[in-house]
Image (cartoon, rainbow, N blue to C red):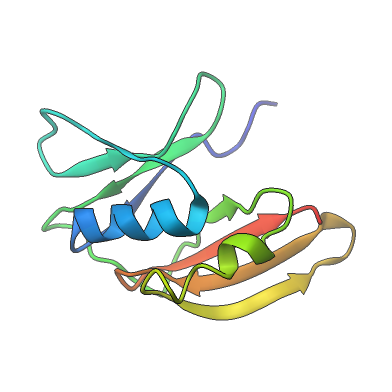
Length: 121
């Protein structure tokens, strides 16, 4: 079976602010979608790799309840978590061991979404 997750949308109130947050925390460049029906920006993606967008839409609202997206924290999720508060978010749970599956943490992004982060080490 291929990856279970193929795409995600993270709702935002302010696309530029959210792009700056994720650029600082995750160390990635997001690309605005030209010609999209609503303002949106892509996370980096490649064929066969799960990815997603930040999306600013009147029918979607940031939330800290409901489905949780887990982003790849790289070799050690402590590095991106250390950037969260300086980028305008809040660490909700620091790096926490989950046994043989590695580590997780949670943060609230600049828009109010609760987001998970995972690393193997």
